[in-house]
Length: 337
Ligand code: SF4
Image (cartoon, rainbow, N blue to C red; front, side, top):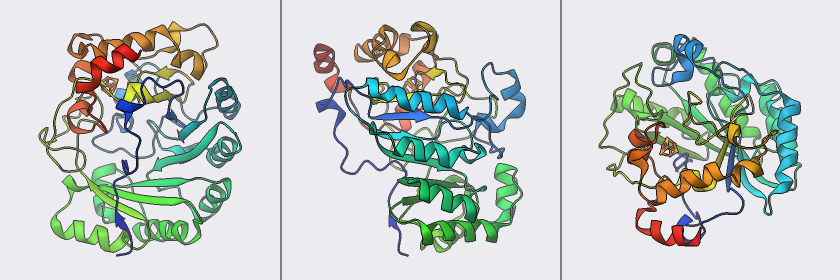
């Protein structure tokens, strides 16, 4: 196998937050190209159409390209460039017909260093691959949901020509130029033979490959009674709960309807920030807003469990998927702020 065992969230060479906070410019901005999905995965609220119909603000569809351009243009308000524009949040990014244009527009901005995305790759035809590579995407993460067509149908409700799917990914790999590729699968749905089949099928058509564990990705999302082991972290180690949410200190999240969420796991748009700043909201206004500052302060004062109106008190991400434990540095960071 040519690919290296690298997780989708690669923490290698990452600057430690504890030495960098507070940030005057966010490191990462998630912008959702489309909040709907063509898959019906059992673990994901976006695939639960009944729930989506009932959820205010969801089911918007693709982000308008002119609105997107306005967001990218407004990044000039920040003193530093954004390290990563992540074209992904809730839905399938390639459902946006302007996806390649979005990549190109961000790459042409002096305020953006890198652009990446995460896709189910079901729409990654050869033609779209060439468009996206030509637009300058820096990293393509692919979520694989099965090792054959039957498993796909069962797990994601999606009928596909599996060999065509694999061939399309191989085509992207063969033509990707400098674009990095990473492929991951949820290991909880695999037997050991299927895990081997996953590595055999994809291990030579990607740069990085990994097997993840099911975690409680979507706070307060329990309609589907997703089963997972709270004791295991995303990457398979032991989980450990922290009190300070690192995400709100370095990421911003913009939904496909151009509203701003406190975090990228805000699947039901229950944690919107844009109502708290003057219209029109911009990334810089949100980043400098008192409402975000108040949330950050509450985390640093270890008051997460008291934030009862939000998903934060019971957030499984802070148990199973944190990139950095800031708890013991909370007081220092509070002083800096
Ligand atoms: S604690 Fe969880 S729900 Fe709250 S902001 Fe952090 S990641 Fe989002």
